[in-house]
Image (cartoon, rainbow, N blue to C red; front, side, top):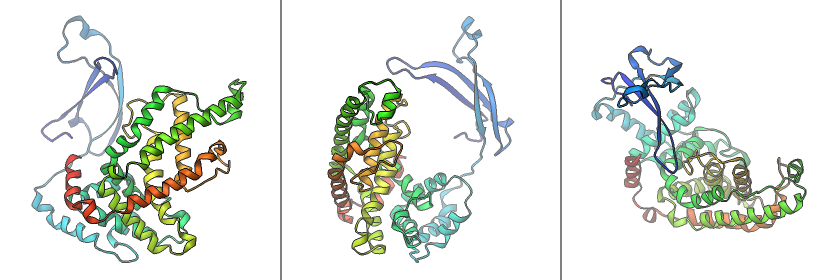
Length: 372
């Protein structure tokens, strides 16, 4: 953030080095007084040398950097000026009418900016005031009540889904790292060939495609077991606030979809968020979740995709792969029944938490917010 007293923005570029110090590549300075407020610029800036550099080295060309720049001005008032707004927003989440809170409903219908940004702002606000669980309850309850088919529940990019996504990233990222990072690191380090597509192997001139698939099934089974063992043994490490939110979600879905034919719907709702929107995307894109600082190479990326597919099938409570995807996961069907059963047991354990066991939610909310 650049205050009004600082009219110049300095951007410094380094080449990250894993084994030694980072190498300075150049810097640029942007005169903010030359920018029109809220207008977007795409401009090439010539990289400049360090302020401390002297002599002939300063004549060396460093190249240019193209940046997209947009200048916003935010005026932050004293705390007391926000009190009426804060009280109004806290009262908003007390509205449990079937159609949902009118304010949040209207917000979702008229907002034009990125929904992730809106959801992130909402979650941070309610976390700071110890009311994030009521927020999530209002949003998810509205979507639950407006959904007639369980198969489509939380499958879109609604404000409820985006808010739960942002909530998990804010409160549970350290938990995610502690749970799956060791397996991700092992896959990055080992770089073993893992491929189930025999046609792809034949095109790559792999004469022993059958043997490669056989060894890949064993390898993928090993990675799956390591990943699932780590996840399923992490109930006590899962943040109490996240467990409370999942328990709340479970209860709302179970109230809405009753009967034996809907017995799996609460499981699918919880796994849809925790696995399909948190664990699986982190496996597919470790850098995006700060699990790794570099993107995977092609072989590692393929292994991660196959592992994510197994996790996806398990979280969907799918005991067999029908072979309808780009690559049939049929060879992994041998591990699916056990994985599905363990997913359900894990979810049951997660949602078995009460207010006392979860700790003081309001104080935890504030603590989380203070670390952000």
